[in-house]
Image (cartoon, one colour):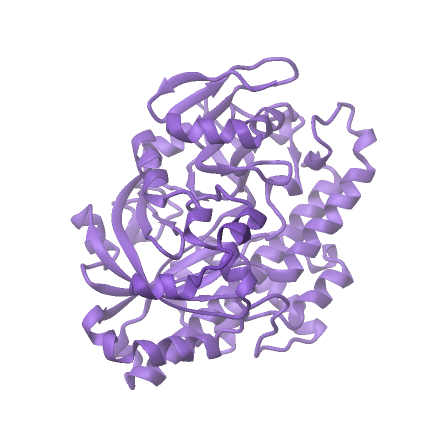
Length: 480
């Protein structure tokens, strides 16, 4: 049966609490988006999440929502341990701490134009990509465990970056609570050779150009200017994170009969936050998150080196500075005010990013006036956006916003739509160079496989969950 929807505003719809639902569902979207969501079953997943114990306020979905494993991608849900709250791998996802970082430069499009072809080739060589790709960093088990504990700091200790990178990485590039003993030998083994790799699927490294500024004051704080060259890196915890998710889903599925309630969907396998299994999953998830941050830090280092090599410029002249790094597949323990009381909640964000508003103590001083940079990558043929967090997001969505455009086409459908087409040529005709390891990935990622990110961003801004700062147009893309 299709969920019933009540319009709250032009960008917000409510699924009333019915049946086994403990809270209502809230979907941030336009009316046009809602029609597609009903067809693919993503709204039913919002309903299902609302049935889980200890859920607080509502089961939420961002405008980039689409069907996922258990939780919808674009889903946000907070659980209170004191009220029997659960933790669920399906609410985090297989690619733990899949995330994106945006790097600003002192370069303009004109500075880069004569070097673009060589730069893309150098980046493609410097950043290993593709299914099962292995990196230049080879770990033994002892070093791998250090990565899981230290995250980005481990990469810096190897000479790959500087302290400023940590200041502008969510959680400082390391989640507390990581325990390598909670990670299986199989997961650790999968991580030994994949550190410093991009992977495949929707992961990418993109050279872009700021082509529109919406908020000059915030853009100045973020050091963004029209015509500026930027770099966006999108990847996660690779095979290690996938294995952590797989391991704990299997354990929680086996114990599901002991939960004391009926799961609306077996893909929502979960366990009490405060139980031994819940604590172990959280510790292993933190390890995978830290691996992902180290991974993106290493990729940033290689990207900087590629720019220096091709442009024959030093770090000072290039001025390649990390603006911000956000994760969008994670569960975090955070303090939120609910009904006038501050509560410690475990906030699941699956395909959603934090959107901290101005004045937050956990933001770097430079962002306290503007709010957190919110990075919203689009497809490889249109645009990406930089937004800023809002106080309203703190009140409505547990300080959450969208994480990207969101798929509207399955990978199989995308391949069918791309049959007989030269996707690389089509992108080149738009002025976008692309390098890729496998054609299969390229056709699965055709621009029309995604919602128009401009529409998603308008819905987020209309709902007040984040505000637009700048738009970035792609110039060159490296895909797996």
